[in-house]
Image (cartoon, rainbow, N blue to C red; front, side, top):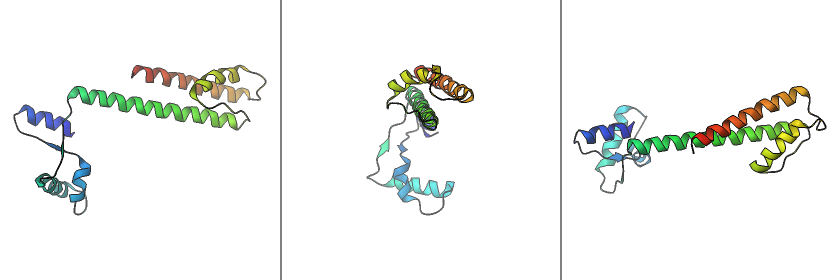
Amino acid sequence: GANHWYRTFMGMGIPTQLISPQHVKPYVKSNKNDRNDAQAIAEAASRASMRFVRGKTVEQQDVQALLKIRDRLVKSRTALINEIRGLLQEYGLTMARGAKRFYEELPLILASEAVGLTPRMKRVLNCLYTELLNRDEAIGDYE
């Protein structure tokens, strides 16, 4: 990526600057290909008003990668919670809003015989609950 080449060229003593892609886009004249991209970059770089961005260190890229992974895990956890809520609603079971209440209520629902869930559905929900707990553990690994 751009940051790798930035560090490589700077390490060789070659003055290097990075331009954010959204600042180059207005200078692209036709279909995307290497030649047109190079022309757009050259045009953008020649502008006195062009704002350049700082290259990231390896450490900064590591942190950025960890944050992206954690964000993806949090989004998938939210999707999993919503999926479980939706499945329960199909059986007439509603849960209070909020993750804290969800984690309190779901084990009670799964343990209850009086909620009207079939044994198959309880197995499915138990598997999803286990997946959810594993997701929580994975999120904790990135904090």
